[in-house]
Structures are given as C-alpha cells and as structure tokens.
Image (cartoon, rainbow, N blue to C red; front, side, top):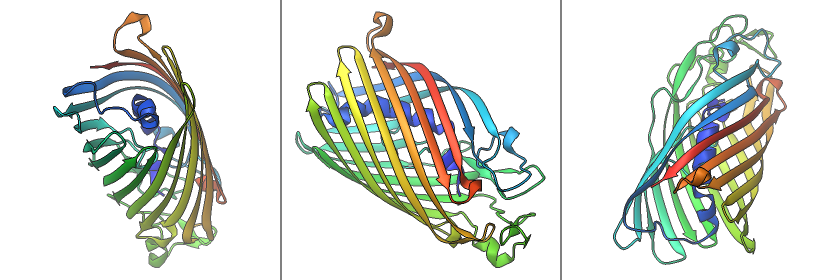
Length: 343
C-alpha cells in the first residue's frame, strides 16, 4: 500500500483548497468576476492525531509486530497554500496553478496546472496536469520490516484529470502513475504466510507497489432551499499495481450539505468507501479488504476583523480505515484554523 492514503500534511491542503471552491461547485457562476489575474493565498495552523503503519514519522519507524496499526502520532503543522488563475477577456477560459479544488488522489498533496473553458452558462470542461513534487510524498521502503527502524523512500507520481460539467452534473476521469523509488517490500526480514517464514522472490514481487491508478466519478448538486445545497458524489477506482496483492477495485460515495448565511459558510460531509484487493497478500496469507469512513466539517467567516477579501477558515476531519488485516487499519483526526486572502 502507498502511503498517500495516510499522508497527514495532505489533509489540510486538500480541505482548504476545497473550501475555496465549495460554493461555486453547487452554483453555476462565472469563472471570475473580471478578466486578468486572480487567486487565493493563505496559511493554516493545525493539529493531527493518527495511527497508521504508513505514517513515516520517525516515532513510527520501528514496529515490533505486524498485527497493529502502528504508533499513535500527534503532530502540529503550519502550512501555506495558494491558487493563482488567469481569466481571458470574455470570461470563458481560465488557466490556473496551485492546490486543486478536486480531490483526485484521495489525501495526496496535489498541485495542479490546468485550464477550464465555459461553453455557456451550464457547460464547461476542465483539463489539469498534476506534476510530481519532490520530497512531498514518501513511504517506507519495506513497511513489513520488524524489530528494526524502517527506512523512508520517495514516491514519484504524475497525474491528469479531465472533467465535463453540465449543471448540475459533472463527470470526471482521472489517471495517476506511482513509482516507489526503492521498494523493498518483504525483502529485508519480512516473513510470509502468516509470518512463519521468509518471503520468496516471487512473493516479494506480489508486494510491489508501483502502480497505475484510474478513477471515474459522477457528481451532482441540488439546491435544497435558499442558501442551502446538497452535493452527492460517487466514483469507481482501480489500482493496477506490479504486485497483484496491491491491486484493488474501490467504490466510494459521499454526501455534502452546504449552507451560506450572510458572512458564514458551513459544509458537513460524510464519505464511505469499500475496497477489495485482487490477490492474497503473502505476508498475511489473506486477501485484503477494507472499509473507510470520513466525516468533515468546514466553516468559513467572510471578512474577519473587517479585512476586505479575507476569510477565517476552520477545518475538522475524522477518517477511519477498517481492514480485515489489522496492519492496514488507521485512524486520523485533524483540526486547523487559518486565514486566506482573495485577490
């Protein structure tokens, strides 16, 4: 498994960038108020508490057995974010750079370079490229190493997404490629077949995590009443990994309720997913299955302290992964407070 599913720093960045565009997802709006450059910059301070074997914090480097979800790690974070856009004179086309408003890689740190074109008031299309950003994504070289400190290795990744929107429905396809720079899964002192013997070369190959990831999603928004909207999203995803035990199919669905009243904006979301892997994991002698639940709350207050074009943002999220193999269980809680400025 690739640690992008458990990256603590990714969580605030994605939630914050989602906050910037949440209301515009539900309401058909122009790409910008006026042509030219626009954007958002901000900074948040947050606190995260999690347990996951794939958390690459130094305090989680050593595990004495593979029957638990790792050490509980508490982390304080201070992080900036930005999004820069240029809109053409006819307000029909916008080029953008920065954190994405779309959650393609599911809790991955994500910077996009792309373009959106509006055909009319209801129709638009977006294309975006998500490049590899060095040093931002990492995992354990051999996550199954027992009794000694695990070494970190980088995850190289690139991705693209294409979305077509015909209000109030949007369909999106995303593709990503992942490469673990030094993948030694099961090669050091990893033990296979319910941890009774060393892994063979063939079994180590079953654990290789280099992969191609594809996702097809459908999203729809609905006005409930004045100032309140609902947004439903469902997607099917497939990860085709070099190691068959790391390949999976996933079904995900979520529901968000958003409301805006005067200077207040509030969004609550519940999301659920079910993932089934393709082959038996040779370390544990079982085929992995897992369910995930995520609950999020985002609150924004316009013009705090009467500062024009600014927002005070509060974010909370809880995510639980429950797997049939305890090693892959994880729990994350995150809260942050920050300021953003729109220009």
